[in-house]
Length: 619
Image 1 (cartoon, helix red, strand yellow):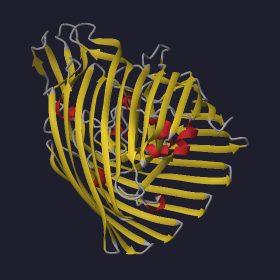
Image 2 (spheres, helix red, strand yellow; image 1 turned 180 degrees about the horizontal axis):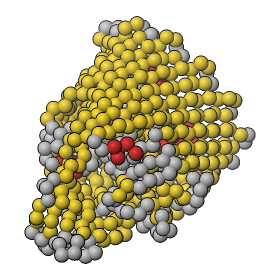
Image 3 (cartoon, rainbow, N blue to C red; image 1 turned 90 degrees about the vertical axis):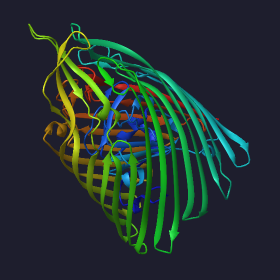
Image 4 (spheres, rainbow, N blue to C red; image 1 turned 60 degrees about the vertical axis):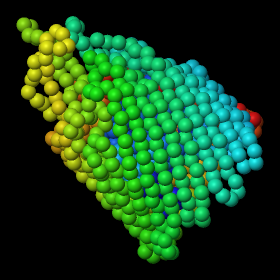
């Protein structure tokens, strides 16, 4: 909401993964933590890649979810998604993960279509002293984090950290090595100036580099046409971010944020190098007693360099893009402590589709202090990515007897237009008791002009040699349809030392004229998590997840994946005030199972049963 708000007073489908949830889960990566969020579909493709989204349209290159870290966007305009194997953090420094299921475009702009995720780290003031975390297990071999925090001067705090991990690869379905191991070194720091009253200043910087393995099946014009490769990619990147906040009162403040981000990332046999400069300004102020107004503007400049291959090429190979935006949102109190209406809109200009208008209207009725009903209607767009506009992907090559080679190619169009969503949502929250709460949200999404492939006449090409016949599939704004569903969650404390969390999500999709999109996201998902505090600072953690069967794309084919039940168990204890140790088992119900397919190989990788032990020492 771009301001501090109580969860029960938020007119949206919002979930918060707390610091305690993160610590107890035993997860070692950011996408795995998102499994804790009701309604999120998190599917592991192989050892270092995930498909992550909310409310349908999951994909290896899911492109309808905006992800932020401390307000810094980490999606790439290459495909309007996230390279999850380039994202990491010292998880003990995470304060919370806030997730909006549903559009957030009015405040956060284009591509915030099906949801917004914001990972927020703790301030340097909250991370004083030293921290060492050591992990080892069947996947970790090993992982080590070190962080040191202190004071530079009165009211000026810092932390510096370094993290290294080396994660083993998975096994492919026939029992072969998946060639998907993953290691990375990450180091950075943060400085916070936090006087008791007055301006606040934050400066953070980070650098990472690592190796990512993948099994890749490319194409060529020479027999055998399909080439299998085990690739090792050397990726690196970093950013510098600064934020200045001037508070005027409890309801008024000015925030200015700027960052520079650079990364070099391989995907398949194509490297992407990108530089991004971003400026964001927002101002909050009251107007009378009934209006709480937030407005702001932003500017982003991004430049890329893409190296071509026969499998995937871009024209042009270099591109610069500029984005300018402005937004305003007014929370109007119609009846104090009972009824509010929030109206807002964002104007965003880009060089691909021009100016986009993304409005929303939200209503919140609180009949009592412990319950709230809300409803919303919103418009959001997804701007065509670099791949949508300038790519050619030679997906398959074959040669019938007596014929020149035939090349099946996916071709994008510079004229591709934005995808549009009109979303209708409603929800109800109630806390009948201090130890019990319910949250239910329902949605109906109407999509227009979604990009999909249509066939086109064949073309004879003489270059590159040898001469061949092109069978083109053209990217066009030809798909539409609707999705709808219900997401329910409950939290209950049957005893002071025992917490239970349960959730269920139901999703239906009707996409025309390509119903294959309807089977890439599960119809039903549910989870039950138990946190039990035992004597002598001992904690027992259990989590049971059910995911319905899906049928994702597997290179050029579609594969049926059955439903699966996942059980995670963990036990941690604190033998001294400074030391915490724990052991977790994950995917305990079966030796291994597949969760999603890859566009880059015809072979499924299976997620194995795993164990990890962790020791955390604070000093």
